[in-house]
Image 1 (cartoon, helix red, strand yellow):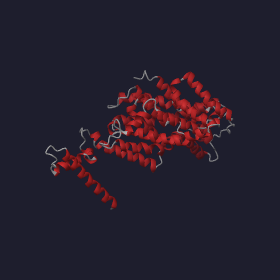
Image 2 (image 1 turned 90 degrees about the vertical axis):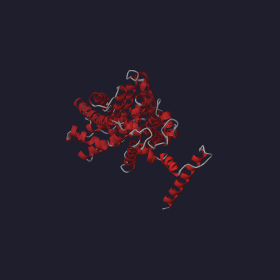
Image 3 (image 1 turned 180 degrees about the horizontal axis):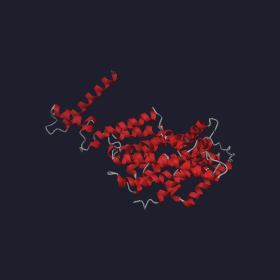
Image 4 (image 1 turned 135 degrees about the vertical axis):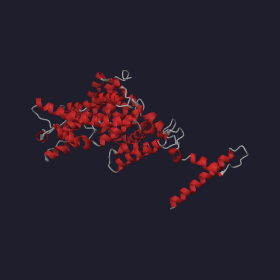
Length: 426
């Protein structure tokens, strides 16, 4: 009741303020206009009026905003109630609501969300790169170094990226209302890497207009990894394959862990400089973790810095969830191709493990191949859960971390390849 009284008082004060302002502009020497005129002008300044009577008359700027605010609420519900990628979906969902508030101009030029987007997401993509540094500081490459073969599984899981790129172009030919060019298709394909920062980084470089839909698809499907992957994993493997036990990983020395990020960076410099922004920041974070002399920097990168940047990254992505950019057939196409990319990536990793077993004496449990999609560490946990269903005493989690972290590098490399073609993809 107290809240309702406060709202009533605020509305009355607002009405008086409008009346006084109108009188100050009156050509009759300050005489107040009719009550009806004042009420009409006040109503035009409300969100309710703009929702149902938008200034330009287009439904996307009216009821479309209501739909997108509901989408923002849905993202918040998924994050809070279902715990689907809450660190990103909470700020993205709230940013979606803010950017669709009529007349506020929060995401228009000069608005706070517009400035966040301009500074952090548009090229050079500062926010995704800083997040990559934080992820690197949290990543242990030990399992992959101990069993280098698992890097091939991470590479195979990126097959979904390039398959989806082709599929997106085919949609343009088959579905009316969808018009993806090569840059758009490349940005959509990276969803298959199951790496949110990489998806946002590449979309910001190649196809900023599709960034909102790509980011929502990437993070939503990452959260749905425990739902999407298991049926594919079971369909492509036999009971005996799921019971394969792998040898315990060898000890990885500190020197090896220090040399790995440096050697990876050197290879990037020599072979794929376009991937240096992602690979470089990722390896910087990992080197800070492993060198043992900058614990404070590593701690900041893993915690305070990545948390702050995540807030701004989510809000920046929210600016691209405006109704006029999101409510179209192309968004539906992105969502469809995104889930297809995840499925193909999962299948690619599993099938690569089965192929490697044909030529290897030391068998690999094919379930760990699915972890190559790089949704760290969720995909590795899914491998462990599915393996435990076949053999409760089988421990796959550390083996699955090998392709899991390799998938992060793989998605960054794939992004670098697509950036190399940036001038051609036009």
